[in-house]
Length: 250
Image 1 (spheres, rainbow, N blue to C red):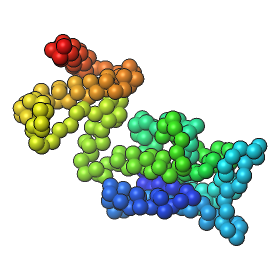
Image 2: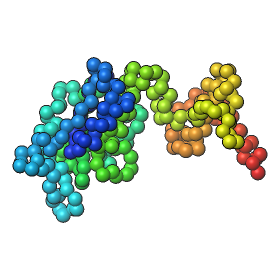
Image 3: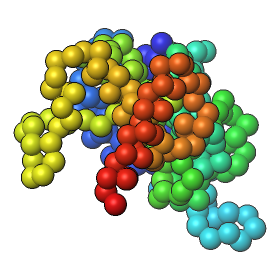
């Protein structure tokens, strides 16, 4: 189980406030969890601590050099470490991937900037991860995104371990609709079943709402979901209700 995350970056000042705030800050009060950032510039052997240079071949932008990055990596890496490079070319971040990574005792995250790292760095990492099909200014946000997602999966971090299980994507579906007080706002009110006190009906409604939201917003997830009989029946009910609502609105 995950006990330590080290983030290698050119901008620790972007990383540290988030690591010390909210849930991640509270999670570190546990004696068995450490979250740290490290400045790659501290491992540069030159007067100005420069770690980037122009790329061969004439591409615009600057590239982070291999040597200082590897020195930073070697300063924190142990026999149980797994090294992850945050890059658009990596496998896309998912709950399935996170459930796998959280079993690793020590993760070292390489957070790039500018045009990224010298490609020779790929020979020294265990895995590449992408947070999506888009490009950010740097890898700091992806590194924090991955860290946040992993820490939520650790027992005891959320206070109620069922919270993570109920999150979107944990079971391959989106979350159900959620409501709080007041029970009625403008012309909209909380579904009657949620205030009925009938626990079985409430649970069925949650599953149906989860399936419905996934169908509306992420049908790609629904297409590969391994349905059980209860879910199939509830999805059919959802479609019947959708058709009825559409008919009544004409």
